Image 1 (tube, rainbow, N blue to C red):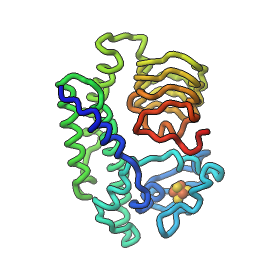
Image 2 (image 1 turned 90 degrees about the horizontal axis):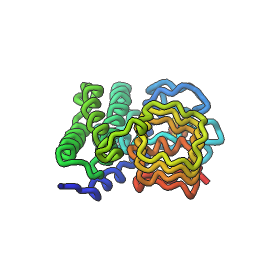
Image 3 (image 1 turned 60 degrees about the vertical axis):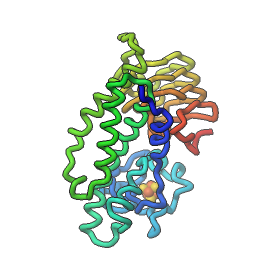
Length: 277
Ligand code: SF4
């Protein structure tokens, strides 16, 4: 069976934002409503007041203390530099309003493509059966090709139609790996509302927590290996000492939004957030 685990993990690990090669797209393109995560209202296409001429953030080192916690959570996986340097060939959005508008519309599309690529690369690193492996690989290669399209083609994409088969493959991957051929209802906690729940030290291995609400849940020292976290809300969940070393489909944004410490075990492709102790 052709499992190129290290190649897939390398692809997954390579999906990192390089803000120095990006024209501050996340600080400009996105529509952000004022909340405890972002201190001001910022309409899509309008640069954040803290974005400098050189596309650096004026308050980068004090974001969390000044009401901009959300900025330390966001992660584009490299979609921003791709749009800046490849799709728009290094021409920044200050050149013309039309150019800017197109760039800002392409960015969220590229972001979604990158997110799917990250999930597929991770899925390919698991020991799934041969049929699924081939389907995942084909899907990954197709998406990689789509990211190379020009702006017009990217703007014409129907992302929902692209997402559907990807979701099906990720679901199959999750089931093959977590259940290892032994389906069990007990392990399906999809969409569970565990907000604020005390799960300290629990053995939650291989549970399906897709789309679950884990906001401020106490997961200290919980065993979360092989848990499927797609779409789970982990804001302020306490992950101190938890084992997420082989959790499935966990993203940097989920980790950045949670609390943890030096003893939290993370998969190799995720970085320990600077604000963790
Ligand atoms: S506060 Fe800084 S990081 Fe956040 S959107 Fe504004 S410029 Fe970007």
